[in-house]
Length: 291
Image 1: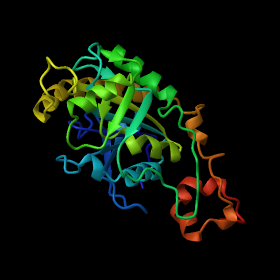
Image 2: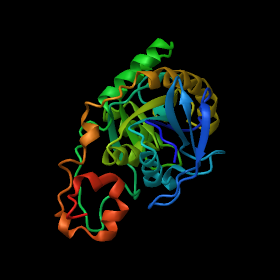
Image 3: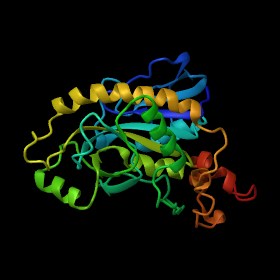
Image 4: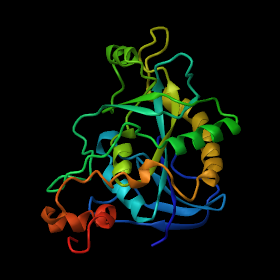
């Protein structure tokens, strides 16, 4: 199977990565089913990159139906250690204008009923998630976006809603009153699963609209999102192209060892089926006698 150290998950409007060479495709099956689409692996600026369109080519999968566990597991199986994810988002701040990029550093989970962990069924793990995005990768993305001339904001809190409908005005004003900066539909459980898989994860948030809070503004509709997103995606692609060449080979962040002290279940009591299912994630933490 081809290998890559960097994964890119494309959101609305980003269904391919331009400039990839030495292209291969991987049709992967995982213990959690098939990922959203075939994964394309190639070289970008000399770096092996695996690209996965989150919603599938042709945008076939709704936010609440995304096979997030399969997507993260599949990238992990390719050797991915860093994921750059792209998502469209509504802005709660006038200074974050449609067309701007934001590299968020915090999350608020407002989703309902999405499976948000690889664990359970006989094995318990509690990861640290105070910093849901990799600080090192966030810094690289911000600096890269600035250098390619994008209007970019270094920090922000991203609310993740269930969707697929957009917010009511009341919901939008509530989230804004919390001090949130953006709202989207896909960063969770993606970010949490990436941490469980010990993958560095950061987002390029593409502001497409002012959500529904701003009375003078038009209520958000999908045609507004798509029109602005075309501009955003061009900036995001340029940012990704520069950023992948700057990602360090050696990781010094906590993402790389997120499970080291997170698993609380006695290894001898973990069901054999779960050990096998999660071997890619936990195998290195189980002694030979228990595995």
